[in-house]
Image 1: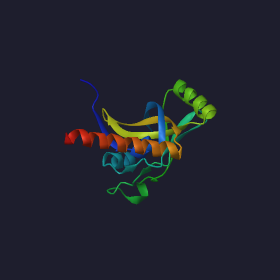
Image 2: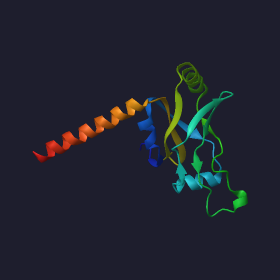
Image 3: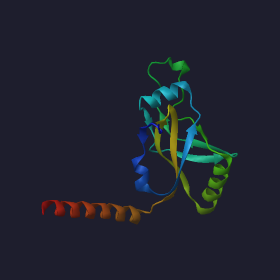
Image 4: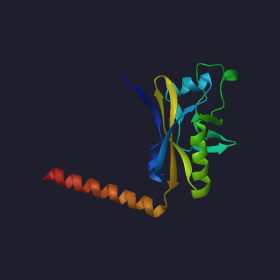
Length: 152
């Protein structure tokens, strides 16, 4: 049978701003109202990042809108820190890389896998401005070449 995966939110900006070195699949500790909002696609990963605190990984600054059909007093804080579920050895490996090499943990996408909410977390290095310009130029050159080939 295979895994059924449905992407709910993607951080397209991350691939432009960072060089992706490795990716990890993590589970998330969520509240019921958060799961309902995520399933409705009301989540924004753009400014999100992950931190490792006291041997635990935390997803921070990811906005999950409050659920509309729920009483406001039972609803969640949209920007609260959410615990990421990773194996201890994965966390240990990440701690070393983040501290030594000055790398960042960035969420790439949020998806449903067999009914569970998962996040694809990337170990990334920030691109400099000239790298971004170069990437844009390469993309533009590629488009122009494809156009030229199409006209022939």
